Image (cartoon, rainbow, N blue to C red; front, side, top):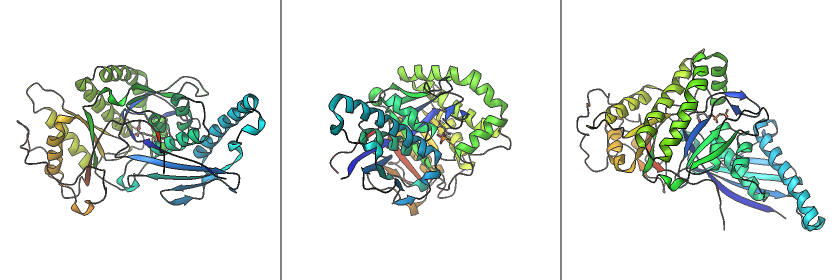
Amino acid sequence: TIYEKTATSPVNIAVIKYWGKRDTTLILPTNASLSVTLSQDHLHSKTTIRASPDFEKTRLWLNGVEDVDIEKNKRLQNCFRETRRLRKEYEEKLRKDKGPDKVLPLSEYNLHICSENNFPTAAGLASSASGFACLVYTLSQLYELPISAAELSKIARQGSGSACRSLFGGFVAWEMGSKDDGSDSQAVEIAPRDHWPELEALICIVSDAKKGVSSTEGMQNTVNTSTLLQHRIEHVVPVRMKNMIDAIHERDFQKFAEITMQDSNQFHAVCLDTFPPIFYLNDVSRAIIRMITEYNSTNSEKKLKAAYTFDAGPNAVIYTTSENIPEIINLIAKYFPGNDDVKNYFSDPFQLFVGKTIGEQPLPLGFNDQIIPVFPKGSVKQILHTKVGDGPKVVVGE
Ligand code: DP6
């Protein structure tokens, strides 16, 4: 007999960045963070978990390739141990309520786990957040755990910090908490997906190379050497969290865009303040910052129309509202002409633009096209147009 469950989980992109741990085992952060969940139509992890008394050991396949070192992977083992412990508690309760022979001892069975991303990991997009969120969510569904998403987020957090924010759709905060055992360090929903339907995202793939310094290693070096980080933790993030939550509640794109860009900038400043310094942005990333800055200064009311943000790599995520999408895609196509070789990199249902313009859009009025260098072909390999999405869901009937 085999018991099986399949579920999918979304990618999230932070607008207030998590960077720094106060506990590296429990994965407790030095500051709160806030992210937008992206639509699973475009990007998701999908995990199938089978449990059986006949499985000799627990095994894991990532994108079709078996990971043979899972015993040594502490983060993975922490997620297994915590969900299994909850299942055991639940089984004991069921045994009391319903009688001993009515309960499946799933907590004693080994597991076979297959996890896949519908986006190539070569696209340089973080997959650990959606991957760990999906593992923990699918386990909770297989084990039928009576548990809230916030409680589950504390387990996903022990797989990868940013994974805790992928347990919800819409707009999600990770409350840092203050307790040593991590019991108050969890994700909460700030607003659901349909709260701000005009908000959309363009993911610009600048490089598909694996990043130099991993987030895990980089942020620990920052904690140990950066004095700017201390200032950020104490004086900047608490104020930004409050203002960002207000901006989202009020659907105030001005406030949202300003804080998003400032926080991305400060995160990369903190990386530069690390010793030895860490560089995640490259020339193309910096030219995208220039382009968005110029774009934002072109309208007479000086209204911000787009916001860039960068994680631990050179790829840009641009948040904007629906009406600006064609203009921005045209600007990227003009200055970062893309690479036709990767045209079929993403198949449907991706909306993919590779060096393509949408109709013949004129430059926005007053746009100074002298300040943006035109990059060689391939500098933005592809643009992925996506929007705000839902949290994890069970896949039925497969
Ligand atoms: C720059 O969650 O990947 O994307 O907790 O060590 O697994 P670990 O790190 P990770 O760090 C993400 C860092 C970031 C900012 C963010 O997503 O908030």
